[in-house]
Amino acid sequence: DEVGLAAMANGIVAYEPVWAIGTGKTATPEQVSEVHQQIRQFLAKSAPESADDVSEELRVIYGGSVKVANAYELFSLADVDGGLIGGASLHADEFGTIAGALAEASGILAGECETH
Image 1 (cartoon, rainbow, N blue to C red):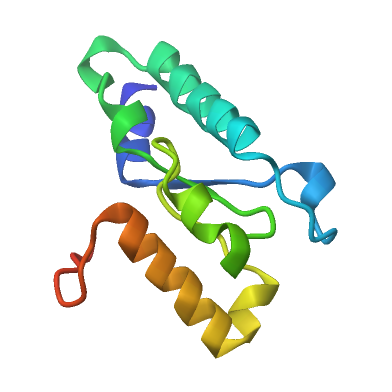
Image 2 (image 1 turned 90 degrees about the vertical axis):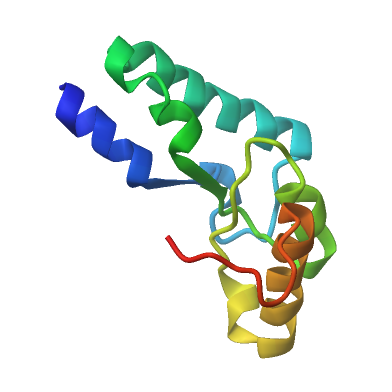
């Protein structure tokens, strides 16, 4: 319904290909971009006119083996709003580098981060 769908504007959807779970494999940037666009298009089609912007406000993050080597490229994609970090989050240096890649790709400079 309209109220439930409008609440999605404040939500986060995490996408990870089933074949990537626990494998260390990452989708190509093209695959990630295509699926993230499809998620937004589905919501845009499902939303009543009064909730049109839900698909743009929703944060869609990628979760398939985000690593130091691919983080910046993934976070630079137009429809990727962040990452769901798995094994790399267990190593502070790797996680810090990935967080830095997100900040750089998003144009966020140190000290200018907003909280939602």
